Length: 449
Image 1 (tube, helix red, strand yellow):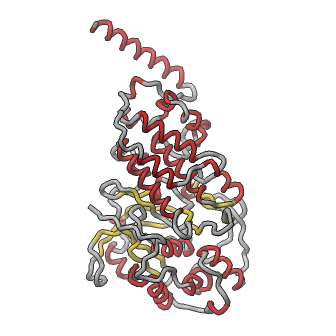
Image 2 (cartoon, rainbow, N blue to C red):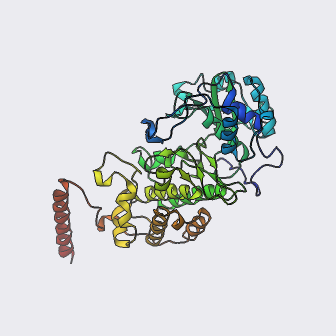
Image 3 (cartoon, helix red, strand yellow):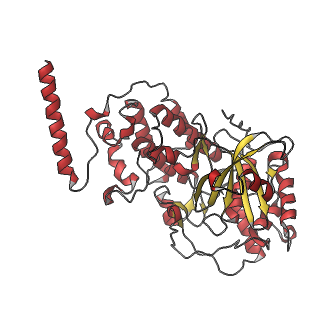
């Protein structure tokens, strides 16, 4: 059993290490390191990446930014302070850069050599592959104090970024910055990193049960019980509430089932902070940024305007609640057109107890709290409200969900309930089969009487 790390007191930074990463290292990573491939990649306006349905919108200059522009970009990313020209250096090396990071995070993170990570993953063997996507690949490995004094013996997940893929150097840096500072039971723990030549790697704690996405949508996975789904919903809500409630709020920006990892006890933890961004401060109501995220999860106002707030995360959380309720994906193009987008399909059913039964995940077999499902559906409806101001804060979401844990009113077998509407030509035949089944049931009841 894995022991989750303990949350830090507010503000959420360790007192044993510097509270902020070195601004020099941030700049060198983002801007002027000559060994970094494509640190500023141009995107065409309204371009949609095909891998994993990530949305990447915006238009960056194809020219190399000036130092003042780079300073502004770094300040936007970190919100710590604005860089001056005295902070900048014209060149660096991976060795010097690793020294900068080591100084920034102290003993909080381990700097690994590429040869060490090759060894523990057997040269990134397919036999040790945990997953892959637009970001690159993730392999399983094992570390102990033979690698570094004081390093806990444990299984780890080694993420090797494809620098030509969806996540490049900037996303790698964002993960190092955020997970290098934050410690919370519902955030995946970053153990270390590797920056060597053109390679960028991250080393996380190993999460043995994989992603929530696999458990909800892969046929080979065991069905998640109602209690387990509630535990996951509460855990992820606590993770987001922690980020939103920190002294300098953090917007996660890519909340979805594939980024929710589960440990051996089904404790949920947020992973992949590549798109995370510092939230608005002071009198600012939002931060404006190019739109990045995943179809079906991104808040509509963010997609339309690029205005990002913590309520953007709340919308995405509401979509995941719907996935937990229905067992359907946020976006599923294999379904009829009217059912492709989960939010549009499910929303009319969320306000009626009888209608809600029609869309509950059939894999639950009716074994869930009726009152609990009703409250979760109502909460999901609030979270996906078109008006961000009508969405609850994540701290309030945690409070509501924890209040449902005592409910024990399990529903009866779902076969006695009406099924969700079936689109297309199969609707008539399905209705006929249901009528025949009901007739047989009445006949059996008559005989028993």
